[in-house]
Length: 220
Image (cartoon, rainbow, N blue to C red; front, side, top):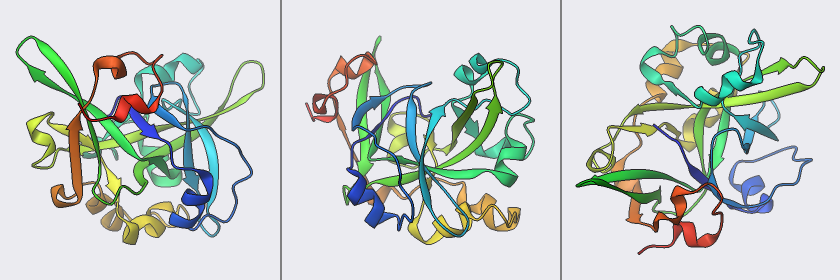
């Protein structure tokens, strides 16, 4: 699964790395993003746009924004079947931006956090789906979920699941929501290569969402 991640690259780096056309928003670095918080995401078929979304998918038919609290992840294996996810997979795909993410390794009776990131240290995009609902007070809430899959060989030492990371060569196809082709999309929903990733142990300060500083990602 993916229950906590970090996004701290500055906007100019993201603009260059992902060829963003429009980014009329401001955001602060976060080293400990938790569910229901705002996350920086990319949408766009022809022109790529940076927008903020709430993490935790609220389907358009839901009548309560609290629905999203338990919808932070969508399993790749059932993405085309689950009523809460299948329409968004067909029509509303996005990249949820990250610099790394956390998982917890069981060691005896304890769970110790590890930080996982790319060897290149570059930001990357989780495979995301999103939707927009209108709340009872007329507010439009755009929210998203991160797709997960079986863990790669490195992550299996920590957890049996991991978030799907979309490779650079697949980003354009993933974001092209005008063209739904499951034969192209579903093969993308697999684990990212262990050879391109690294991880290290971090402090248990990351266990509390209230802790949000660079200390969260420092190796111990």
